[in-house]
Image (cartoon, rainbow, N blue to C red):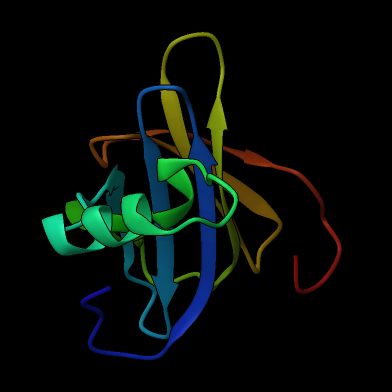
Length: 131
């Protein structure tokens, strides 16, 4: 996924149009990727061999191997004012149309980002020590 540090968390969200993958590394860097799965065409030799067999006829789709493409969309971190907050968990939320990236921190806050990495806001979810 292109991180320079160990990956700590992964989150995914899918719609009919796309799959979004969110990752978090040990340095607090979050990255969003677009995942596309497309069926790869089988070669002519495989198709001819399947047609020549006398066995039960199988769907041609059983032999298709999907091809996955992962494309980096954005990367961003929690904004810091003084001491950097540690991210404890991440998630993806879709409310109506927009997609939001969520990051829970060790101070009990949840920061919401627009998909382009711009911070939408932060809410305090708990006052328990360690978030």
